[in-house]
Length: 68
Image (cartoon, rainbow, N blue to C red; front, side, top):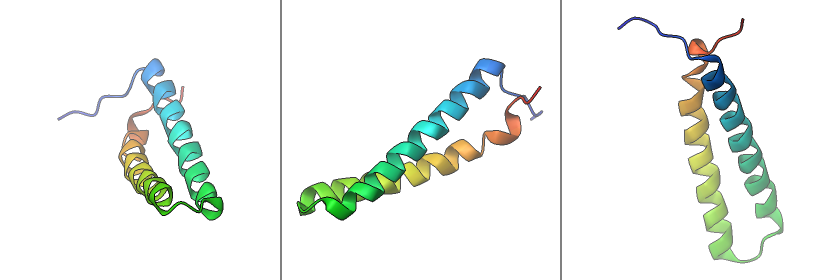
């Protein structure tokens, strides 16, 4: 299969998704330190775990993004 670059709008969308997931990951990770409810803490940890998986998947798109 030939390498196909993403369109400019797809590149921007990819960067926006990475930024959003990174902020969500950091927020959940930081908030875990001040949350006392164990159920909420588990949900936040699940969000952290899923965000890491999502970010790894999004990173695979970077070779296809446009820079010019």
